[in-house]
Image 1 (cartoon, rainbow over the protein chains, first blue to last red):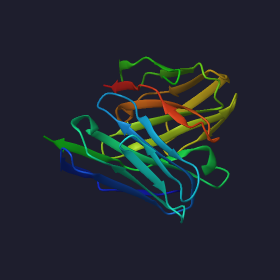
Image 2 (tube, rainbow over the protein chains, first blue to last red):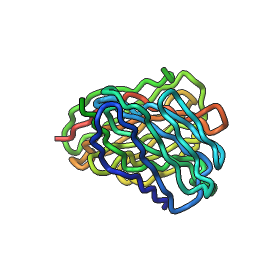
Image 3 (tube, one colour):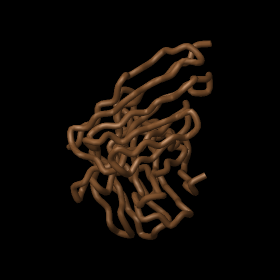
Image 4 (tube, rainbow over the protein chains, first blue to last red):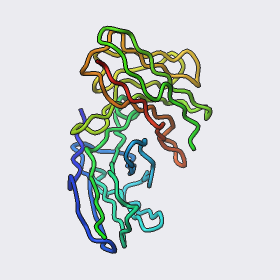
Length: 114
Length: 113
């Protein structure tokens, strides 16, 4: 099956700092999605990427679809306390079976210190 | 909101009993998914549906069955619940065409005692 490696597993940063996390895949993806999950809630979509090389922003968040189609990164600029949570990457493969589903990374737990 | 309702939101059941979780959507999306989330494992796909009566297995399908008799409802059934099925279950809906994506419900917390 497809493998997604997400790093880092956890981050402790000071408020105001920038954050970067990434995902790499063992196979080619044609869609990358980034989600944030708060405790007790479902994942909420942050950014969706559909083309290799695509760079998309959503407020202080920026994500890129790697040109090899096997990786993606998410940057958060000027972190604030409400950025705390778990961030997940998810990818959609290109084979007939994998194209119908998402594979998720294991998540990055972000803690923002005042 | 993405128009997804999961029920029940919380359930405690005994080992060996059947349990059915329901996912209802009002968005007419073709794809519906059931994931489970456990500490250290992230989100793992149980089953998914790509149309009415069209379903397929995911990564962790053993012990689970699903049914989709109409577009808006996707049911997940644990025929005989085990303690290893204690988890948070998330339904997701959507499509992969540009401008659309996959949205998650709020989760169903299941405890098997």
